Length: 354
Length: 258
Ligand SMILES: Nc1ncnc2c1ncn2[C@@H]1O[C@H](COP(=O)(O)OP(=O)(O)O)[C@@H](O)[C@H]1O
Ligand SMILES: [Mg+2]
Image (cartoon, rainbow over all chains, first blue to last red; front, side):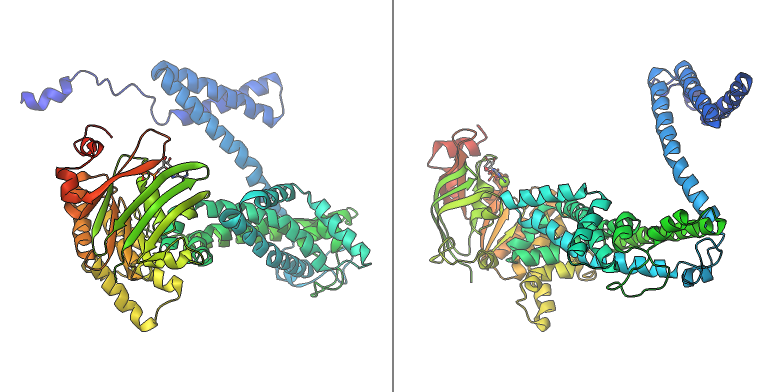
């Protein structure tokens, strides 16, 4: 009998302090939003940003006050830190979500099968109709060729730097990669353009690919280097100690171990150059007709198409709609690439588990 | 099959830092030789000079001679890759290849060297896993990843991987220091069996282990931190543990320092 009652009479645990109920953050948030709106309305402020700021500050103060009262100083600081992290998260997510929201909302207006399969060949920029087939084709060809050039060179450079590079040459290469990382895209475009002018050439798709490859290479080198460095040295030594030559160790042990990460890096680099406009504008020029040959004649590309639809629209709503639809297509393209990269990374990740 | 190792006047550097100095010893074929000594006295460094893994470390450099049955491993025109096929190595931490299955791990040495016949491969894998006393535990899951095994099983997998390429000498750098007592015992038993076929050199921090598994024991020491490590003495294990000829050895073994 007394045994069963013992827990009830136990003195309050020193390990368990008073704590705010779990619904309290929501209640405080709701209260401060209402109060924030109230204060702003009373003071005649009409900017929603000011309302939100006042509500946010109220929320922080109230959280700290209540928590300090009920739970003590350390928990109050903990709650403040948690609130700040959440606030930062929300602030970061708002522009992202609103960007996607606006693009989808405006983009779906003209985005249909016809739009994806027709060019602007017989449609003036100010008229409705037309499509982006020629731009998609151009983008895929230019980015694809740039990847064929940039990715292998980048991966091989990284392998050199991590596995072989010692001394002056390696340091020089690292330095140039650093410099290349900082090259503005327009400068890469101008560089190729100057070569084209020397040989008196007209704009064509492959010239754009070259500039894009220049932009892509340092990104691939950097990400591949990081991935290679993550491979434990023990694996290299284990392989070398079996009497496996170094190049086969790299090919068969080091690369398979990090191929997922390398692929992800390449995909992200592709996503980055897929949105480049400046070099394409200089070197590929843009073309309302379908030109499937990247080695001759001007081509279109998605970012360039978006830019030209805006700049040549002369205020026409049809051109704006097309630009938004093309933006949506471009975002979807990059998103799909990222998803593919993640899938590959997961699929290729070293297997664990029994 | 097993080969004798004859080291004379061996000195090894990391860049400008001299890690071990003037080491000479003979390791008999089909025997187990244990290296003991305090941390940092250069046991691992010396072990790695025996299959030319020392030079894999940036700045690693060696002077002196290592004869493997009368052939100098550091002689002109010797290919370190072929040296490592003759002198295998097992590391302190089990390090199976994470992308490969158990079968592929054992077959890795042969496959990556390109020196095998397809029909032999599964026989060699089975033989090596049996040689490493691991066959019964893994025979039903050869296609599962090697990293899914327990630590002791992983270490035996690494031993199987090392013996699959039929080396003449097997070097082991503290192979049991990351393992529990039962796995340790399993590996000690295994060493006793392997010495029928290989020349074995094992670094250990565990005196009882050295006494249990080895025929000969070498004691390394360094006079002060930053000084190069030296071989103090090498003798039959029984003598080293009962009646060593150098006072420092006796002090170390009886735990008076180190
Ligand atoms: N990778 C390395 N680079 C530079 N110095 C090293 C390296 N590895 C070991 N050393 C030095 O070499 C000496 C011997 O080390 P090691 O052979 O690991 O000793 P042990 O295995 O007996 O503990 C130590 O002084 C250590 O600092
Ligand atoms: Mg060591």
